[in-house]
Structure formats: C-alpha cells, structure tokens
Image (cartoon, rainbow over all chains, first blue to last red; front, top):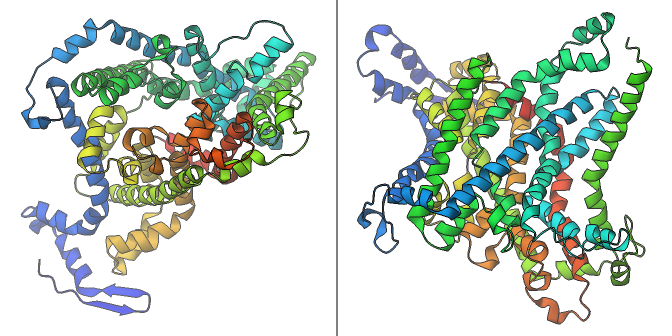
Length: 334
Length: 291
C-alpha cells in the first residue's frame, strides 16, 4: 500500500494526516470483502509488531516442545538426532505400566496431592474464616501480612529451615533428647516421615496465601445479610454456616478444580529438595522421576513418555472436573 | 449492632489466641535463625540462647561475605532478576495489550495461551528446545524460557481492558499509531500495575532454584539458591563457599554460617515485601475476575 504519509511533528504532537484519513476509508463496507485479510493485516501492522515477541515465545518455548512429545514414540538417541531415531510406537508407554518403580512413583504423586487437598486446602478455608471474624481492621491487616509472608520464600529456604530444625542435632531433636529424654527421631531420613513433613511444609508456606481469594470473595458479602441474621437471632456460628460459607462456595469449587487438574503435580522443587537416598521409595514423584530418568540417566524417550502420560491425565482431569462443576451449577473455569 | 453472647465472647477470644499462635509459628523460624546467626560458638554449642543472641558475633557474616563464590552467585541472581523481570514485563505487556485490541486471530491466540496453562509438554522436550536454541549453560536459559507467565498475561489483559477506550480513540484521532498509543498512553497509565507484576516476576526469579540446576553446569554461573542448597541442605557450607576456608584462621561454626546464609538470601524478599503487600491483594483479585 503505497500510502502517502505526511507526518507533521510539533514538539509533542504528532499528526498523521493522510494516513488516518485513508484508514477511515478502509472501513467502507463495499470494499471490505476483497483483500480483507490483507487489509486487516495492514490495519494491525503495529499491533502485530507488538505481539510478535509474545507469539514467538509461545511458539518456540511452549508449542514446539509439544511437537517434541513425539520423542516418546521414538527410540531417541542424541547421537542419531531427532529425525534419524527410529519409531517405536507405544513401546515406552507399555514400559510405564510394566515398571514397578513407575507405579510406585505414580502412587506417591497421587498420595501427596490427595493429602494436600484433604489437609492443606481446608486449612486455608478455616484460616480465612478465622481472619474474617477479626473485627479490628488494623489487627487483621497485621495478621494477614504475617501469614502471607512464607509464600514469598523460596523452597530452598523453606526446606533449609526444615533441615535445620529437624536434623539429628537440630532444635526439635535437642528438645526431644534434653527435655523429654527420648531418642532422637530421624525425621529427614525415615521414609515414613517424608509425606507428613512435605504436607506440613505446604501448610506452613501456602495456607496463609491461600486465604487471599477466600477473603476477597468474603469482602463482597453485603453486611446487611449479617444484620438481618442478627435480627433473626442467628448466632455467629449460624451466620458462618448460612452466610459466609455459601459465599465461598464458588471460589472453593473453582480452586478445587484447579487443584484436581494439577493432581499429577505435587510441587517439584519442594520434593526434589527434600529427597535423599533414604526416602526415595516414598518421596519420588513423577516430576522428579522424569528428571532422574531423562536428564541424569539420559533415557530421553522413556522420560518424555512418563511426562506425556502425566500431562494427558492432568488435562483429562481438568476437563472432567470442569464438567462436574458445571453440573453442580457452578461457573467452572472456561 | 452486634451483641455477643457469653459463648461467642469465648469463641472470639479463642479465635484471637489461635491466630496469634499461628502467627508465631510463621515467625519463630526467622527469629531463631536470626539469633543463631549472630551467636558465638560456645552459645550455639550450649544452646544458650533462644530468641536473642547473648553476645553479638558477626563472624558468620564476614566469613560468607568474604566468599567470592557467594558474592558472585548473588550478582548472578541480581542480574537474572533485573534483566529477567525487564524481559517479562516487555513480553507480557506488549502481548497483553495487543490482545485487548481486536487484533487478527485474537481468539485463537487467547485459546492457545489458555491451553498452555492446562497442558505443557513437560521437562524433557522443554529441555531439548532450550538446548537447541543454544541457551544451555547461559544465564538466558533462566530468562527466555520463562519470559511470559500465561497466568500473568491473562491478568494483565484484564487490566488493560479496564482502561477507558476513549483514551485510545482520542489518541487515534490525534494520529498516533498503535505502538505510540501503547508506549505513550497505555504504559504511563499502567505504572502501578506494571510495578506489581514486576515485583511478582522478580520474586519468582530471585527464588528460582531448579532451572539453575537443570540448565547451568558452570558453578560460576550458579544463582544464589543453588549455592544456598549446598550450604544448608547438603550441609557443606565450606565447600559451597568456594573453599576459602583455608584463608580464615578460625572457622565460624557451620550452623551459624548456614543461618546467616539463609538470612542474606532472604533479605531482598523481606525488603520488597511491604511493597508486594501493597499490590498483591489487588493483583490476585484482578485475576479472580473471570474474563
């Protein structure tokens, strides 16, 4: 489009006369059908320039890897390269179900996720209800700023604190030994301790932050409802049951859907940092397993297959949970 | 307005006490770590302190800050945080803004973005593409592959939609093109929001640990969290600090070194926390509005 462009610049004002005039004529409907794609592209040329970095990012780092999933159906070796590695069909997916270790790893993943949903998730709700009962706004703000803080610490710091407190010469064990006169407990190496500790860490780090959406939902509840309930003689507990909790229902459902969709993710960095040779059998989860197999042992195809299996189950679960939410009359995610 | 019965008063008091206890469990580890990091070796060995050092000793801090490896990794993390956050903001804001206008293919692009929240290719294919694009063992590997968080992108799109359209229309009449509208009208209006997104991205960069392990082989390029893991979790403070131990006459006790390292690595987070707090409630609520 060889449009004549006349730009008059005076200090901070830019006036593009011809250009904008011609843009208006572009919108005349009779001319629109022909070349409409071309015209749209031309109309959006600056926007397209703006969106280009983002599009390239999603293409290269989010979608090309999805094509890389094909590795799972090939016998990939770095020496032969992607194209020359032979196709092996579902070989690696069959291996997943024949390998006792993978079954154990899947089981660990599900157990840790489920424990989180059963323990950590309700604690956020309870904590939000407790905070909601605080009348003094300054005190409430103060409490909130304390319980949100752990969310912003790195997992290295949280696991580091755990190690410092729980190791054999740590604070907890020295209290146990010196005051209660019992033998020190090997918290960090006992396989049976792994899951409870991981859940407690999640509760410590995230339950405060988890209240934020619930509190936001509660701030939308009209005070008139509570006033009316008081007039009707409802106690504080009844108010909570009949007003506060129903106000939280849709938030709870949406967050549960999100969490269920991520049931195959159980917190990679946290688990990875907590693992040691002694607790592998109860602590190894899908993500860490993929890392050990794929990156450390260079078993790329198998690790990709495990990762893909995980991703697909996750996707199916979100879709199902979303359907379920809609059946119960909630909005759902999409 | 509210008249509390006796039982309800008790409940309220219990609630307050319980919340106070919860706050203490959140803060106690910090107080403990703080006080050990400043305590002397004899006090640590005798457990002769709990929440306040008996005598103030700064050996652990001088020891850590004298380590080239520690200082280098701090600089690496500062670099990744500053450059990474800048890249995050540029990539996220340009894309988010374009998506608020009726750009060609808008719906398809939005769908593809949302889909990456629900499904990702997984670690191995992502590792491969990072390798293929030549980022392996470069600090860019910690920046480019996480240039846009799809969640933040969607939230930012919601935010830009809230800016009155009349402003854009006025700018169009003045003859501004879309890039000029974005840089001269939209961005200046979005400074507080950009600050909030920037803080969240920055905290993510500062705290990121695993991508350093996955993509960087050269210890000189390791970010602070990787070093911190070696100091505390692997329990090898002297090795992790680059073995300059030989140059120090009396080593400070490893416990105090570990706790000082934790505090030093967390300090920046604690400093920006008040600013974060100002923004996060707004940010999260924006995100909870479904679009």
